[in-house]
Amino acid sequence: MTEKEQLKLSNQICFPIYSVSRLITKAYKPYLEKMGLTYPQYLVLLVLWEHGTLSMNQIGDRLLLNTNTLSPLIKRMEKMNLLRRARSEKDERNVFVELTEKGTSYKNDAAPVPEKLLKSLLSEEVELTDVLLLKDTLDKWIAILSEKSENQDRSASQLK
Image (cartoon, rainbow, N blue to C red; front, side, top):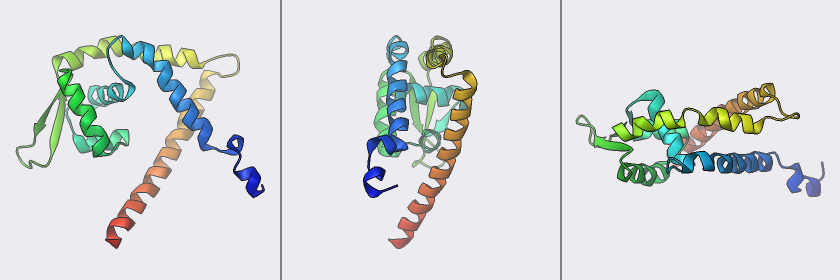
């Protein structure tokens, strides 16, 4: 492929992934608006519903979010009374996040959302097996890219 061909938007691997991500987030919007949630807030709730109380670092690791992105998100959710933060008694640098009763109650409202969204992705051209194969491939890419990113971060911190 020539340099000119390489720089065409239609030849980029990342652009369709970026576009689908934005469109799926947009597809979630009507379901989440009923609960007064944004997509990132929904992701935080998913992690807490699954794992219970977690540290900020654990939430960030699971959602691949930096502290500077996660902290304001958690603060907004705390103001909405969906969760509460508490400093660790053993190490004050660690902040743990737990669901409130209100945050836990949202789980029932959110339960049908994944199936509704999945149904909206299926068509004559796209079957469930296609979606599951794509998810499996994306999970593998996340693992590969996360490992490379961690290695780069380690290398950069060693240079300091």
